[in-house]
Image 1 (tube, one colour):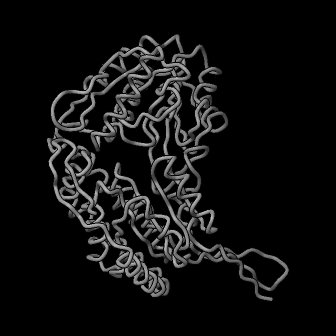
Image 2 (image 1 turned 45 degrees about the vertical axis):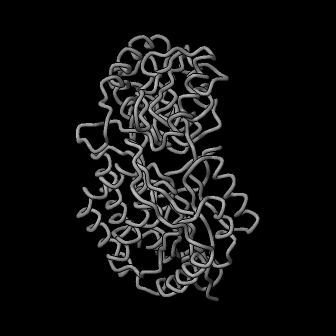
Image 3 (image 1 turned 30 degrees about the horizontal axis):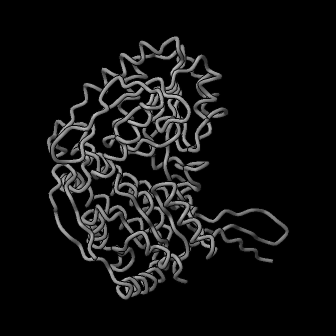
Amino acid sequence: MAFVSINPATGETLGTYPEHTDLEVDRKLDAADAAQRLWAREPLERRADLLRGVAAALRRRADGLARLMALEMGKPLAQGVSEVEKCAWVCEHYADRGAEALAPVEIPTDPRRSAVHFRPLGLILAVMPWNFPFWQVFRFLAPALLAGNGGLLKHAPSVPGCADAIVDMLRGAGFPPDLFPNLRIPPERVGRVLGHPKVRAATLTGSTAAGRAVAAQAGERLKKTVLELGGSDPYLVLADADVEAAARICATSRLLNSGQSCIAAKRLVVVESVLGEFEARFVAHMAAAVVGDPLDPGVEVGPMARRDLRDGLHRQVLRSLEGGARCLLGGQPPEGPGAFYPPTVLTDVGPGTPAYGEELFGPVAAVLPVRDEAEAIRVANDSPYGLGAAVFTRDLERGERIASEELDAGCCCVNGLVQSDPRLPFGDIKDSGYGRELGQFGIREFVNVKTVSVA
């Protein structure tokens, strides 16, 4: 068996990569375990310096890595460069601030001295997706490796070149060569790796179905997991919103990464008094986006990552239309090669349709009309997902109250789009997963929170 890298804009095969056998995986795992035990003894300052070296390497290679993403999964070049820059940022953030989060915390108790220490767990299995093939990996590896852990990268089969590039960059920056190996294995072989006694925990970014499978396998073995899964983020546009700003931001969020983002604006919950104006402005912004070859610097929306994903999205659109939704823009895949889907806007989306209850992982937005704020909050929370949410209103106090107290999501914004930031925890509730990445909370997910008392 082999992993095949295919250009989603043309259907051209870019290369084939042999799948690793069980024996090869076991050898890599044993070597990673030995490397991690030595790595955990390295001074934290040394680990931080190596992360800074990776950040520098990322910036030097930004154009080439962006081109690799464009070829393997269709990301427009400018967005690829931004993704690489964000990876450099997260490396530098933890190099500069990670020591604070890992410093022992003294707590006065009955013994002479008592403190909480944060020690590495060991080897962490990282099951990563194709949509942000560098960022999703680096936002895990930067804090995990700084904390003294090792990792096993099980990347998506459709981005084998990106996986190899990440591992090569770590080695080139001076990290131990066996500390973070790439395992080319299909999803059905993840359970075997997770069951290995030297693997202490797992993190997964992917679909809810994949998260359930890994959580079940880990649960049987009493191993911790952090899961960042699907999302169908609601963006509430209230009666007092700046409608033009809301429409522009919603379009930007919906089309990021050609619509293939867990935290994209997917369900636009709009109060009826501004519905007509919002739809007109939003459709105009969506229609203005330039669709085409992601290697063209002027393109804003590239192809979807695979043709089967494009076809699945179109079936969701058709079923939503059959359920009573109306199409204001797009809705028909173009003929010809590639996995392109046009920016699409559905409105009058109601319960029972895919656009209302399922995640649409592509450049399709669903407009859900509501009467008022109370109904907007109810509809926004009427979802199995709980990753991100946003609310648009000129009353900032009102917006913050809704975001902090009313919306069922892990990341909420007022008058802005949801995005991850190395300085802040990022994560989910409900069927979108559990655990946190980034910030102080993220670096402490994969450590032994150890109590030490001195009598």
